[in-house]
Length: 421
Image 1 (tube, one colour):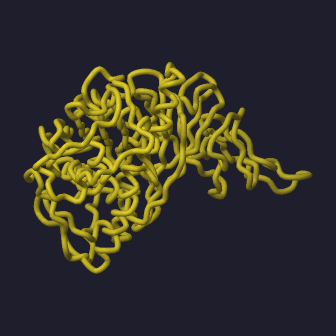
Image 2: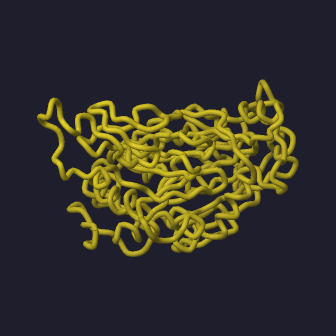
């Protein structure tokens, strides 16, 4: 870990943050180093909502990069996490996504673990009829899966393998932390889950999340029904380290932030763009009805924490997304839709209806599931070339406009720092 990651046989890294060499999305050695330096390094990772482990014995299986983990509520009420790997022969300890147990048992050879992941029992440890068994000096305390450090924040559980280092609040930074607390300001509940497989490197999806101006060009629904256009107010916030970002869109004048889809009007700055309104209407306008619940005029906020956490607020549709790499050209995206424990039946129904905005077939995000694959295919023979990330300048600083790639540059600032490039 002390040696800098190799810069790949296909090329080197250009100076600054405005060029990203395409080999970083395709090189197997880079993916291997990312697992050690980022996912098993000092970064914090979202692993599950706290409500998943509400009571002692509750657990949830999750992932940190390629590493499977178990999050559990211990007997004393503490939330703990450990690697989902039996210390015996490496099999998964937990096979289910979640549940409630007294302890854990590996299905392969019945090694047992307590709720903290400590080895407590080995089948046939003393052998059979005085023959076989484990050596007399075998110490169960010396064997077990790796333990993780955990933290809870706004009803979410984060974990890291780093035994020391900044806490989760310092890792995110005060400005973006305030934006996270703005949305998750009271007890949350899970109202839906699914997993989406994407044919691209995980970094391409996080770039897409931090790309704050493509929505007005790529997502026709966004612009047609005036959920977000660059002519609306808003801006981008990027933490000093680049680890965290938040982008916001203010409701358009006469827009839908508190009561329905606005009738699109002509905007000269969008004249002739593919995304301009073509007379499309919603058969069921109630789909776009919304209520203002955050005491501001923000109708859309996207927030991310390096390397793989995203929080979305689109009107009243709330969700967290977790990025799980599956090789250099594939990834899983775990979606968890959220509501608040004190939601009225009407507001809960509204959230569920608005959840159709974002997801694999979401009216405003199905394109995001395709564009990463378009890039992955487009760069297949371009390892010595680089992308151009100059919109809005060359720094990774916040901006009062979303016509910038500052938060994308912030991602690469954080990535390079943890990868030693």
